[in-house]
Length: 287
Image (cartoon, rainbow, N blue to C red; front, top):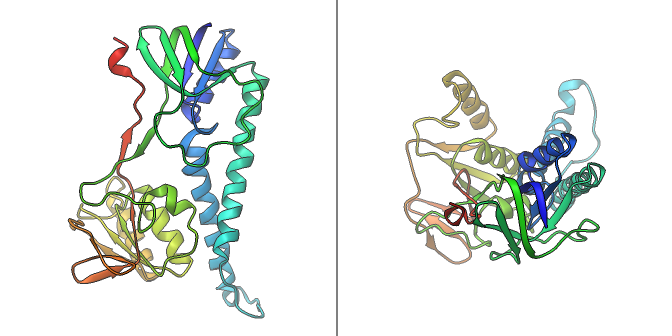
């Protein structure tokens, strides 16, 4: 089947491009192999903000007295419910992207798209494990096959990049996938990286009562931000009980009894944040 435009990836870059192309009168299709809305909507920006909102409400509840309010009893986080709310928010917006595709008459092609030559995409089964495959799929999706287009837009996003010697195992060494949906709150957590992803998770887990340590290889946390902002952020985070090491890095992880540790300090969980690599889509074969 032939189109004017095919977009590989249905994240914020992909689905917005698809909508605009369709609005301009172009026959448009979008290829997705995991979840409508991509990483941002399902496993990134949106669910993390939902988690942080729960953490914010918990913080307000713990400071009711500051506002002249009396709260009977103790407010404690229910990890399962907090995560459930976050996943529900993502699911609702995921369905919304599917609705926008239908509204704008955009075909959805389900599978992994690979560029085989200029103007041609072969869509097949995903060659990589899919984290919780979307169910149900949007109605009337097209499946595996060869598709051609006058224009192809690449919006495949990125994935966590494993660091040598600190490969995620999904149990004690996490990527942001596991950090977004823990079975239970760990007693302690080390976060490697203090960019946006790392600091968001560090802040959330600390609010939930977890002993959190942040390790950053650069001299300051949030290294791409202004120095004034990073200084204020560090002061506030440490005030909340976060331990922060800058100009430092984790070079080795040793497995102990039910935990991972580095010299001088033990940690129940380790999360690798801010280490990402682009998704592959067969660009070398496209010419």
